[in-house]
Amino acid sequence: MMKQSYSIVIAGGGSTFTPGIVLMLLDNLNDFPIRQLKLYDNDEERQNKIAGACEIFIKEKAPHIQFLATTDPKEAFSDVDFVMAHIRVGKYAMRELDEKIPLKYGVVGQETCGPGGLAYGMRSIGGVIELIDFMEMYSPDAWMLNYSNPAAIVAEATRRLRPNSKVLNICDMPIGIEDRMAQILGLSSRKEMTVRYYGLNHFGWWTSIRDKDGNDLMPAIQKHVREFGYVPKAEHEQTEASWSATFEKARDVYQLDPKTLPNTYLQYYFYPDDMVKKSNPEYTRANEVMDGREKFIFGECEKVVKAQSSADSQITIDDHASYIVDLARALAFNTGERMLLIVENNGTVENFDPTAMVEVPCLVGNNGPEPITVGKIPQFQKGLMEQQVSVEKLVVEAWIEKSYQKLWQAIILSKTVPNARTAKLILDDLIEVNRDYWPTLS
Ligand code: NAD
Ligand code: G6P
Ligand code: MN
Image (cartoon, rainbow, N blue to C red; front, side):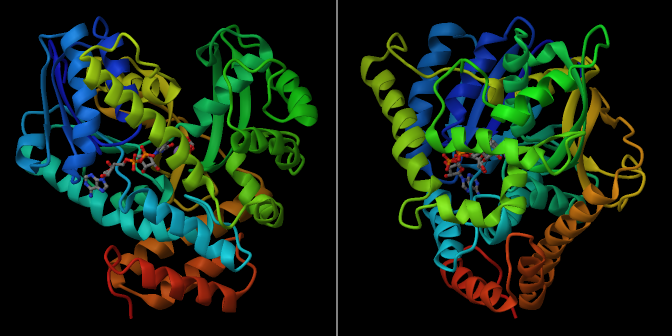
């Protein structure tokens, strides 16, 4: 798809992550030229607040780029090469319920893990499939790069429902952790490391981390994690308390398999009671995000629009934005960059369900991703992954078949849920509040 310059639509234009991605794109125009940038959302008022600031960023840095914010799918998805998607169906109001309802019953309340993650999955599937259909109707050659969560369930849904579509599902957690590993080692960037990793989304392990000369960096990182988790001696940036606790908890998560290094999300499956104990059922992560990131980003955007200048803007770009831009570049320019993506297993993990959506390193070129073989995985990980992938597959089956029974089975299969009676009570509450978003189950 090598072109002189590209056209992109960001779907979920009103997302708190949109300004960061726009700034990242504007910062990389030499490597990745853009002629058109559009925002698309189904909430016009929310998107307009972000769009106002993005328009000014573009005017200041690259006035040649055509900019448009729209809620009209045809306008949004016509004449684009890439769809960068990060929608949150039901927004933070529903995330809050996903977290608070399970907690009411003493069960993990989390955005992507456990019953809350399943509830979010049941909302996201339809929204993401709709975006794919818009893309294929108006720009059939485009690629969709999808951050929309819960990525594991969304990826399984895209595999089942749109198997031939050009969609790549991605997650920023491994790169966020790799950034910390690089800090722990005193490296200037995570890109100095070559990693081997396997698992499901938010459910995986590093098995090898080497520098560019091939030296093994695992022992030094493991030594640090054994004592401090993923908390570097000197933090580069301020970290919110709840995230600091997660990075510290990696110390306990690591103990289950000291030969590897774990994704932090495993804390919800290995230590569900600890997670519940430290949660405040009246004020969860959704509340923190609404009071923190959402207020900050919308406040900054308002400031930029008022001043008609980005001069005082505190919005920064980060790994989250750089990852999706790297991926677009790899597809556009056939860079062959090695990136972790969520792809159909198909033998990549030899002794695991070939139809599972796994997160593994892939070489990315203009024909898409080529997964790097993992080989056989140990019984411990295989057992955990078989249970978790069944949760994800059952949610998608429940959505397709509108099956109450399958969703109940999915919830009880989650390692975060100890009791089928409790699972049913949680499910019934979730059904009640998700009436506008879920298919009617029977
Ligand atoms: P946000 O609520 O600020 O933004 C989401 C936007 O999507 C909102 O403006 C909303 O109006 C819009 N939206 C909802 N349903 C839509 C639909 N059907 N069509 C079009 N637009 C729709 O949320 P956020 O915190 O900025 O996160 C955005 C998404 O990115 C979430 O799904 C989040 O979980 C995900 N995310 C994923 C990763 C990852 O590792 N994969 C990392 C960070 C964020
Ligand atoms: C990480 C994960 C994302 C998740 C996010 C939640 O980045 O990879 O999948 O959405 O954390 O962060 P938040 O700040 O919204 O709680
Ligand atoms: Mn993620």
